[in-house]
Length: 282
Length: 322
Image 1 (cartoon, rainbow over the protein chains, first blue to last red):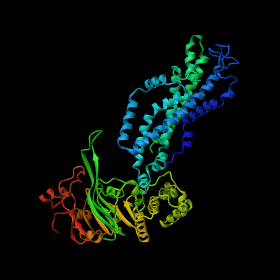
Image 2: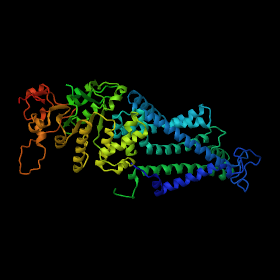
Image 3: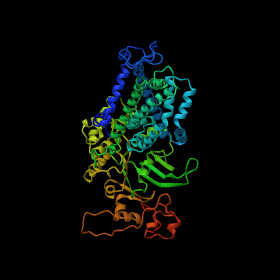
Image 4: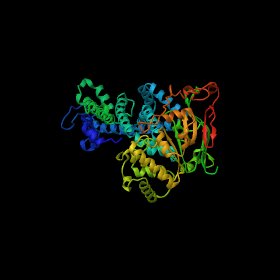
């Protein structure tokens, strides 16, 4: 199967939109120090200022510049998304593939473990764990990944089982290829599309979860996060502070949308049957 | 015998059906159920049978792609049926396989040169330059040009892909090649090219083939000796000439009567079998073929016919007197 990702994304309207959103937020996150004159942590006496020339989005209850907090918040969001995506997919590949290749009692154990993870309400467990562990960005990434891998691992296991039946993998076995060799040379390259879509799905989820945890106040309070900003803004909502509340909410929505659109597009590229109306009949 | 390359003794491959987490499987699909034969060095041993008779499973079990349930596979004096993975590794070089589907058996993400080179890499043979040279050599032997190595499998036709598969099977200089329906996925006009190539290569490299097919005319063309399989057992085994001119087992007779003849005016007796192949989970008692056999009697129900020698080199599993 040869997939032209570039063409697929170019031809798809949602895909283009997703890429534009992603590029926008990424560049803001990347250029954050250039885009503002204030440090996001710097406290001043000018508290509760409305938007002005000096402070584009005003200041918060501690006199911190909201605009710089929002753009630095994008950084946190992205770093979490990427690391959770990578860690989740790596964990899932490791566990899913090993279950499919080793079979036996190990596979049964892994499958039951996945079932357990899938049955227990994720968020509840996440809240409890996050509350008990020492908050910090690294802990959060690890906790989010640990609760995200099971679904992905199950898909990967199923796909690996299917791939193992392909005759090019049987052929590799006839000339004596070991399990690890087959995994690296034949199975993982074929898993590419699934890994890509899982990565995007989990990155999206991570953005949402990170903001949610921060909003609920169980992540590192020092971390500049959209969730924290929204939480703060809501506490002072009687001040009619839309300029404080809306920008992080907008950033959050845009990021989640960008990932969602990329995910949809990827799915459409990989599964042409989803294309409604286009190329009907083939 | 000195020139026996492969001896299969009472080989069984049963697949469990049912069973659960803690429950042991209660029933088995007896895909290969006690098969014995020998393959001489340098010959082509054909295995025919309709689909589902276990011929592909047999081929895969011989190569230890599937773990045998029971029996012996003696390859050049060593029983490989229960050999450990590590010890098997060296013998893998002598045992290769050509697959049915030339589209699925080549990894579409790898270049052809890499595909053919892969066995050498796995066995750590030669350096990069030597391997490249060997690949080019083999491409030419199987009738492709050297530049083909730089292309991907999807750029080739079915016949060319099968040539690539053959080149890959040859690169380790094997002694025995199991050909699992190597031409059934190909166009009729291409089939003969591939068969002739296989014959040529056999002479050149003194190869031994186990040729699995459901196509009797293909088997007739390429084989020296032929085994007919029915429901996991060999029912008749003889030299090609004998089996085609003087088939003894009722199943073989029925099978041979189904070969279409090019001469329209020539009428021949067509034996039509009634019913379907019974399920291999629950095969008939005694002779597996008795449910469809014209001559079946009580003995066939109670007693399993053994493969007995009727005349030198011609063995039949049937209670009937010939």
